[in-house]
Image (cartoon, rainbow, N blue to C red; front, side, top):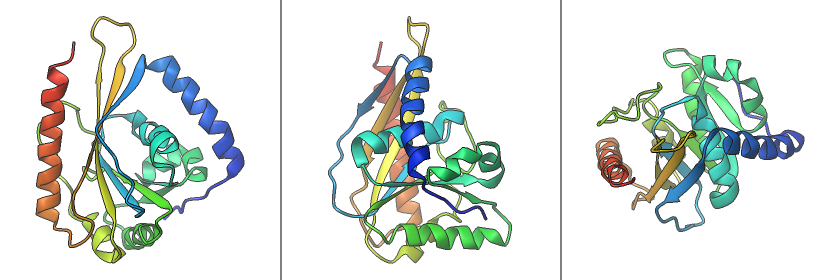
Length: 206
C-alpha cells in the first residue's frame, strides 16, 4: 500500500497548476446543489469517468469543503500519477493482502472531522452515459469501520461541449441524509437515484 503524504510546497504549486490546466482544457466548471457543513468528516462519493476525476474534487475541496484532502486510487494509477501522493492520494490494490490495510487506513481518515475522503465506488472508469452505477462492496467496510458519524456527499461530474470548442464540467452535489447507521443497498440505491436526476437535469441544458 502507498500511503498519502501532504507537502505544503506541492500543495502551493499544484493549487495554481491545477487551476491553470483546468482553465486551459475546460470552458467552465459549474457546481449545482447545496452543501451544508455539519462539522463532520466528509466522504465524497463520485462517478469515475475520466483521468480528470482526481482534479475536480481537489479543486472543489479547495473552494468549497476546505478539508484535508485524501483520495483513494487504484495502485496502478497512483504509480502513474505519483505526485498525487504528495497531495493526499493513497492506494488500494483490490484482491491483495494490502487491500485490508487500505480499508483500515481510509476508516481512520474518516474519524477526523478535518478530513475529506474521495472515493469512486465503481472501482474503474466507466462512461458518463452509464445509467446505473454498480458499486463494489468492499469499499463499504470503510464506513462500517469508521465508527463515528460521517457526512456523506454525492458527487456526479458530467461534461458537454454544446457549440463550444472546449467542454464544460457540470458538478452536481447532494447531501446524503444519514450520518450513521449506513446500509450498503440504501446508499447505492440513493446514489443511483441522484445520478438519474443529474442526467435528467443535464438533458435540459443547451
